[in-house]
Length: 172
Ligand SMILES: [Fe+2]
Ligand SMILES: [Fe+2]
Image (cartoon, rainbow, N blue to C red; front, side, top):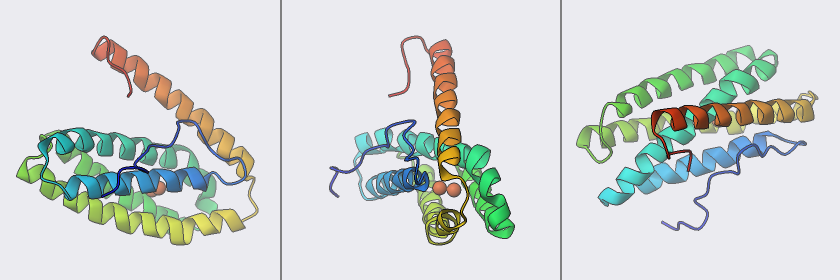
């Protein structure tokens, strides 16, 4: 598949008039990385894309759970609860993936399950939750700034712990 648009969002970038645009950018990135991973037999691609998928997904779900879901929960509590349950399933798959090496048959089977889970979840967010957020009349700018601040903090914490664990290595 074409690799031209396989790019992570620039970190900390949330449009003030609609921060869900950034979440959708993350969705596209993870979805494409998963297609890339599952559509190849190339070990180098597996080794590169596997950890990228896990890292991007963890950053994204952490941000949604810490800042986005709590702020929008009142709009549709049942829908947000469903989204949190989806994250739980994805988290469990991510834990199992971390025990394995990219390219192993068991890893690839788990990645297929993760893709099924993530694609269905993205559809719920993009078709139901995000439109509700955009139409609710809440302060989207304030939400965007909170997401930005949280992500900046998350990145600096992770960079510090990565430096501590492995001198010389940081976020790519
Ligand atoms: Fe999402
Ligand atoms: Fe989500």
